[in-house]
Length: 464
Image (cartoon, rainbow, N blue to C red; front, side, top):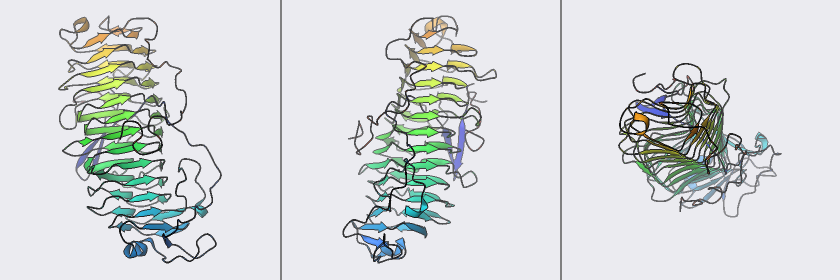
């Protein structure tokens, strides 16, 4: 019994929804005047109509340039609109008129954008193709995905693009033979598809190995900003950090992963929007780390740990997150094969209405072996600390509660009044957006070498 289980289906694959927290290093875009087109580099194959900003193009269509190119070539696409689904069958670098220009910083002038759209999508990367770069485009209005790259390639670089009004922004996987980077993109309202869409970045039909998704801005997605169904074997080396989410149903959904890190993201959401979990660990993940995120406002659970997708999660760490103004702050249901540790989190003002809401940290009756330590949990409508399990742990529960600060608990003794423990984010610690120190910039930085539309069902635990 919790709040907000997201269930989504894509071609018979069930998808669960999640959301995020304490974003220390998130960079938020500010409005900026439109940048002029960035010139083509020497030696590039040029696509477009002849003009002062597009001198002597060799091709009118991007697909024609792809056919003529050799692996390793650069294709420069001048500002303009291109109605085509570009099939990429070799390793190429595609540069739009805004290549190198952060997509989060006010890129709203179509006259200086390379806009790609078609009925079926914008770019499709063929199977077995590695090392594709797509930089500086606007990909919008497609009855397909902005980029399809789910044929088990690797080493892709997707940066500085605007994804808007597609089915999903990106649908991808990666075999991990080379690192993949998704960075400094704007994902805005990719909700087409009648139940097939609603995600900014969607990992399906294979693992997402050695992938960094960082410093992106997501907004207005009906399912999730970031959603990983994955596959067996589990995704490894997957990092989602320093991203900003505004009014997405869910920040992040994680399934079928090993060592995934969801860190330093910031999610804000209007309370008027449908319910959806902030960050959801749905199942079959070993060693996931949810650290340093900020989840501010919105209905549903802030951080949820459940076992509804595949095998139970193991060795889960939920640490130093800030969750404010949710229906339930942090919720765990079982079973899990190893310890879930919840520590150093600040959970405030969990005020959701109804019998299943209004709890700060809530463990359901099927939990066992969860460690809840040194959290600050205050301002909940019903209880700051709640544990429905029974066993040989703290206060007759099956779990361990240690040195938590809170005003109310059931059973008594799970949390007690007092000062914030060291290292716990306070209620007023939503310090806006830092400088991207946790993974912004070069690939390899840091440690990387909802609604009725998919996210709206309130999560009230197993069987509800």
